[in-house]
Image (spheres, rainbow, N blue to C red):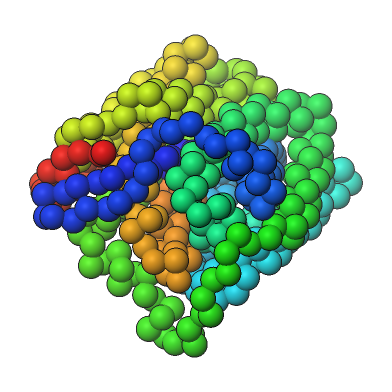
Length: 429
């Protein structure tokens, strides 16, 4: 159910099967020392610039492809061409994040993304860019993002002072939500100004991110990586498979994304249903992040303290219902409200999912487990985009979005039966 793709502050999770994961409270005041700690600030800056560029790309590429083709199917193909290379290389990417310097992996990926953005700017400005060329560029972005994400998520504990991982995650998450709100709106306005301008902006943002990533110094040395083996390559899969609560949580999110991918159809809604243009597309893409940021603030003050498993399932159900409301809406204010509710419900789900995963994983496996998480959650956004595009081409845009929302609710109800231990997780402390 990933709209926003960044994690919340942590919490302690106690489950009915006796597992307990020591993680941090939802919100604690941030220490001034952390806010002036250069390695962490460089990390947040590099991650935020990259996230900003990705949000601009989502608006610019979606609008340009729809403008060139007028096809819902082609919109769906944007997600597929990113998903296929990511899925094929995700375990290699996770192993790279555990074996090589995560700072260098992060910087190299952002340099590659900068080069792709420059190519798109050049082709769009010259008027010779074609849809197959855009798809090829998005495939390269998918590969770079697939290597970047595990490295970024695994790097955080190494760039904060001892005992500050939780606060660092909270600050990084807040920054990510801010750029998720601003990025789509900026992308929409930039495209309205000139179709090539968003790509120039993306190239500059990724270049800045790479420079900051290269300047990061690690707070603590890490242990030498083990010799790579075939078994080590898939160790993250084994870790997830042997933890039923984690498996149930990320698989629930996976199927919710596949079925509830109405966000992929936003260019059609902005153009043909709401008649809002590129600026309207930017507002629509930013609306889920507004809901997510507001929910993060609420959870920071009023953390979830009981019936955590049920709250997660309820959040998925609310997400599905809000998807149906958005699908049927023909007014901008109602569409924005429904998308904001989707972002809010998604945040509740992420709070629980991420709390179960990150700090329960040893440092030398965080890259590989992060790669599995990326495949199930982040990359499934791209496959869900393809599914939404194909369904919209076959059934119509509104029917496809309504069907996806109903399917999301059905999956949540089914998972409550299939994973009773997850449903019975009681509290976040």
